[in-house]
Image (tube, rainbow over all chains, first blue to last red; front, side, top):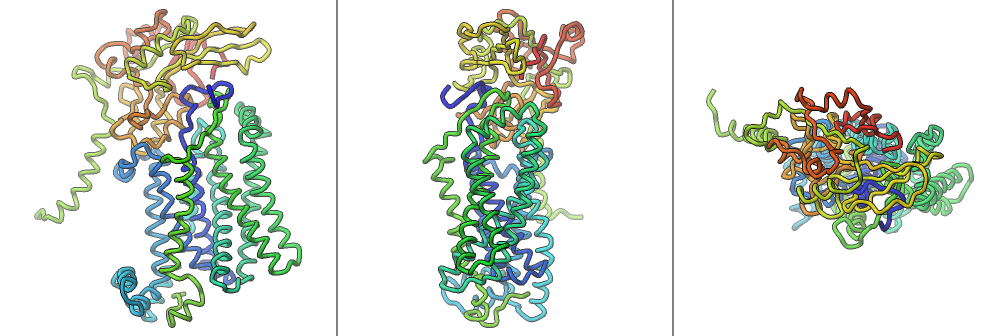
Length: 395
Length: 243
């Protein structure tokens, strides 16, 4: 049979989860990571990362809005997906997706952004004209009270929401890891470390994405990059990355040392079909290289320009590495037979419902949404004291 | 307390959800069939299997299984003396047309029919997000096609590779133990087509079923017992290399 080496159970030849299911944990990971970075400023009072606070929240929202799309496109019957809300099966890890998603979207992210921007929205609803005024008036939700007391209440509630948001972000992505980690039939997935690895890799990707977006946006706006901010974010990226890499290595070493019945099959797969995406892209280029680059910025006295370039390169490599990690989990977990006697091949189509083109569109779409959100709700510090005079954030 | 329009509006969604629960997971059975009186399983007597593929063809015809997908299939194992843990296995087109003569020399050859194990603790049922896959009270694992989302989580969760997504209905599909037949007192298509009696439908709740005597007197095992799925597909004389 073409694309098959050794023996696969006949129904295993075709892969069930495509590149769209690779995108799903990648997108939710960016959401969780970006939110956790934003929470640092709010809850732990890390002043240095303040310039990225609002950008991180808007980034999280943009990616979260797109996160269910790959799932929806992947379903055999997307028109039935509402059944997960009506009759969730309580023993299914996947059944909770709709609830976790809605909770995180509405109770955490949208609420926190609204509270944080409420003052700006009220001011904008009065200072703008035409359709923009209409949009801002709708966004005030009928609340135009921006008295000192009201803003103080906003700040307190916002703080509580952030506090609830941190475990929610962990829940959102840890839960995605659990979907894979709880499949006992698949030894490549089945490990209690999976949710933990997913959370830390999510933080890594989210921090890298916000850092890159901040640098890119500042450059596009011809403003000066706040190096204290970027340096701090880069150091967080390094520390989180070290934890993430240690966990992944722990998993790897454990598998090698135990060498259970699946090891021979999985080891062969990693050295053949997954060699490029796992060893080369994920580990060498996507993990070891950015960690080494970020480590250099910590031990060497490098100039500002050199640091910026290193951060940009390390950030890009990190995102590629985390995407490769998602790829290797989702696709890698389906390339070998549960008989451990053979391997199949993933043939990605180009222009189908689950093809490459759709995957590219779904990757770019959050950036488009972010662009609109940034235009609508400018996250830049100088906008608070400039255009929106007297519309500084509540905290 | 008077019932107002507001009360009714509040109750409607709850009633809709309750009705959905009632509709989900109800197998269609014949009028005289009592679900609680049966606990279905199957016995596969491996030494009797000749790898003719009759069962595969009968299943495909009976259940309109699309080409390239299998509710049941037959594997041919070749185990050599010097590497009993790594057998050579083939199953050309699920053995729909049987097997070509073996080219393997030495060692031993035998056939292993495979299908859904109708596990009592089935991982596929556990993971279904809407309960479209369920264990009927008579022990048969079934899929409600009108309810399945086609998320494929159950396909991933099955340790035996018994499930697939039907490309026509885009829903999960697998062996139903010919539910439309067994609830009318018939046997499955594969059992009926087997020329050697290697497959025997068995009802564990029927005290007169020969399965009880067979289980007592033979070396019977299930596939992948370490998966703790409580599979009900019993294999007589199962070789340790089979996975």
